[in-house]
Length: 351
Ligand code: 8ID
Ligand code: ZN
Image 1 (tube, protein in one colour):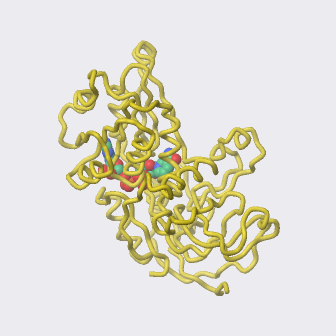
Image 2 (tube, rainbow, N blue to C red):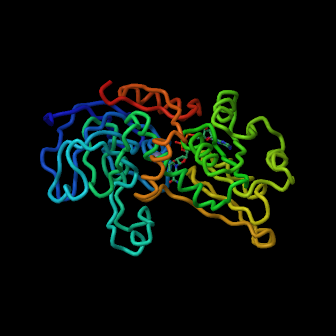
């Protein structure tokens, strides 16, 4: 049975501290909504951007963050039974809901829907024991995949699988993954390998180098110690002309500075990481002359989510995570801010 109150990690105002408090559990759901008992949640750098308020777009406060939730459906609003039933294991992703009938939704560009709702941004998210979500957008979690290991796939996994598809490479081609040791990056390395690509991982430090090597990455370049990043990245390709694409999954602006320079002619820059106030200069002459493309990628649609989880259920992608308690969220944000987390952190909402 659904309790009257539950624990939730709440930030009262932008830039404020995150605190775990008791909140009322919604007893009545609107049409199409579901109540999910959220057992685990991954922590995405986006949650930190939202809390700090360093983006040009701002979240709604007070806010319960989190958009990598994994749990079980415990109550249904009217009409929700068309999509899910009580007891279903489902994921809560960034895209909470979209209209499904507009031009964008019809083309599978659900994140671009003008009526899009976002968990942990416009709607409360998964850093709580019971969360309201939307039946048609929750992601079924395949059997054989634990809720804990599934959680980070709901944002990091979906997003980088979509980015690999957006890069549109063929097996044997080379992709640079920038921010390869982070939450998104360490999964991007694995989806890229699963797609038959050669991978150059770019990040810093021994931990992240080791992690990316263990995940099958072919090369590592340390952005912090390498004096000539462009030359070093190009040197990792057999003809010395650079990777066919670079997927930038870093949260810092510096990651974008040289990516257009080290990708090869005809190559693609796939922006994914969202540092505030970042820009990359596209020189029209050389951009055209070398026919370089910029192909941004923003989370994914329902199908991308299902596909990204299936890779993990099939054992082709594995989330590398450390388990912590929801009450430790503030210190986890601090570690994330200082770039100390290799892979992902998953919080257990009961702790
Ligand atoms: O849909 C989207 N486009 C989307 C979805 C989810 C997340 C975008 N994001 C954004 C987040 O808001 C954030 O800005 O992607 C970024 C990365 O999120 P994350 O993977 O959750 O962050 P992390 O775990 O902190 O990893 C970031 C990694 O980047 C490295 C760090 O060392 C860390 O491993 N990094 C940095 I910061 N600067 C770098 C640089 N110059 C760099 N790696 C290479 N070169
Ligand atoms: Zn995210």
